[in-house]
Length: 150
Image (tube, rainbow, N blue to C red; front, top):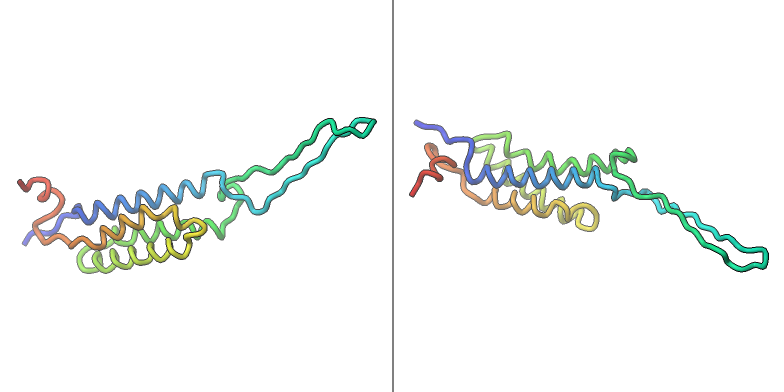
């Protein structure tokens, strides 16, 4: 009795999903998109006659979540990475169950977080859904057998 190889089309979709989710998480954690509040100050310079000479306004630039230490948000961004990695740690029947759980949880995360960071994870969630829908390969088949088939 031969075992199923680890690589299959189903696994490839799950690995791609994990890669897309990790890329989105890294972007969200390192890109300068976080600003806790808008802090701007401005002023003007007037001449002795009361004419406006110049106006200026300075605002604090946005920073990354990691740079500001917004750890409550960091855990919310790391959660989809763990969800996408779930099925890659299992084999057999647990693999099928974790594939479905992972895909459903990612879709729910995207829907609930749609107005904030959820939309960044849509490509990864879609790949996870495709990976969950595909059938598990039978023993003796796998990615290499799929490549060798005519």
